[in-house]
Length: 226
Image (cartoon, rainbow, N blue to C red; front, top):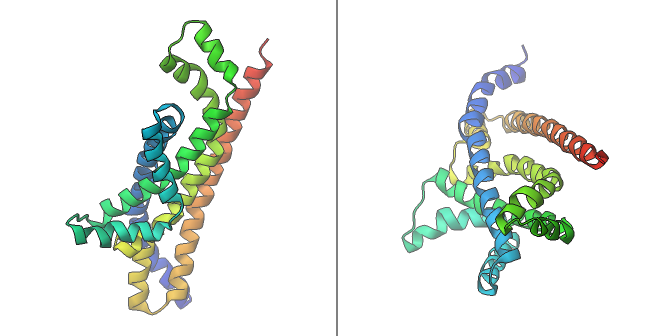
């Protein structure tokens, strides 16, 4: 076996371990928390009083207008200057969740607004409350439209978690950096890391296609009903 192949084979277990133990949980937790925050932010922008709308608009503007790497540095390295200290993983989780929340809020707001107003009127006409109309009429329709952009956000997030390496979170890229510092083979290690991220992204892209087909068929079936 060639030396580079042997190095890649020997490095694979620690890289995969870092992916399973840190990268995947960080991605899942950040997406769930960020999506929840994004949903709350979108509803606030659409239905809340003006002062609350101004607050969430400022949050979205701030997060979308600054680099994710800078946000992570501010949370992990900047906040300790004012007495707020986070361990690496929680700091990364907060940073990614805030970032995902801002971007998904715009997606959710747009898909809710894309539902025709007549759907609201129809729901109210049969005696539904606002909550019932949202749960039974608006969100099911909006979800089908939201699947592709939200799936893209999730796929991007799993790649963005490599930035957690700057906070010393021992995820895939940070594990590759440690091995490269010992073996002095950065090209091989970083290529292997890229292939692992590519594998994760490809699997998620396949899942996204399945979801889109599922929702597309469901929508077609509903449209075909008399």
